[in-house]
Amino acid sequence: MSSHTDVAEYCRAIETYLCRKNDGHLVRVVGPSFDVVSGWATRGVPLKVALGGIDRYFDRYYRKGTRRRPVKIDFCEADVLDVFDEWRRATGVTAAAASSPATAAQPDDEQAAGRRTGPSLPEHLQRVLSRLSSLRATGALPDAAEPLLDAVSAAFDTARARVRGDERRALITHLQELDAQLLSIARAHTTADVMATTRQEAVSELASFRATMAPEAFERAVERAAARALRQRLGLPTLSFS
Image 1 (cartoon, rainbow, N blue to C red):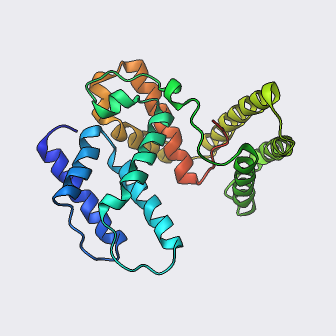
Image 2 (image 1 turned 180 degrees about the horizontal axis):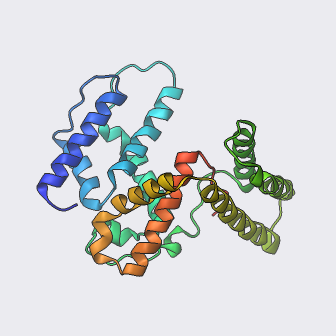
C-alpha cells in the first residue's frame, strides 16, 4: 500500500470501523491519529489485521465495566501492532518486509524464537483443551477429532508434571504435529467454497508484499495466512506453543 489514495481509503475504513465500535460516536482519524493509522498502512498492516487489533482493545475495554467515553484510535495501536506481529509470525513475513514492502520477505523464525510473554505451557494446554471440548460438545468439531482431543488431554497431563529439557522440547514438537492434524481435519470437513474464500482472504492480506516476494515464498505465506483465516473462521485454537 503505497499511494496517497490507498492510505486515505485505509484511514477512512479504520475511522468507519472505530465509529461502529464506539456505538456510533464519531471519533475522527485526523492529526496525530491520522499519522498513527497512516503509519500502519505504509508499514503494510493488512486492514483485517488492524481491525482485529481494534477488536482486541475493545474486548479488554468492555471487560473493565461501564464505558465512560469514546475510544480514540491511538489507544488501540499497541494491540494492532501485537496482532500484526502475530500475523507476521504466522505467515512468515519478516519485520523488514513489513516495514518496507520493497524488501524481499522470508520466514521470520529467528525473530519469533525466544519471545514468550503469554501463558505457561500447562495454562496454554488447559485453554486449548477447554476450547476443543467446547467445540466438540456443540458439534463444531467432527468425530474424527476425538483421538486428537485424547492426545491433547494426555499432553496436558504431561505438561502439569513440569517437564524440562528434552522432554519439554519433545512435547512442544508433538503439539506442532497435533496442530497440523487439527488443521488437516478442519480442511477435510470444510466446504470447497469456504476454502476458496479463506485463500482469497489470504491473497488479499499479502497483496502489498507480492511483487517483492519470490513465488515460492509468497505461496508459503498464502498457505499460512489461509490456515490462519480458516482457524479464525472455525474458532479453532492454536495447539502449537512457542
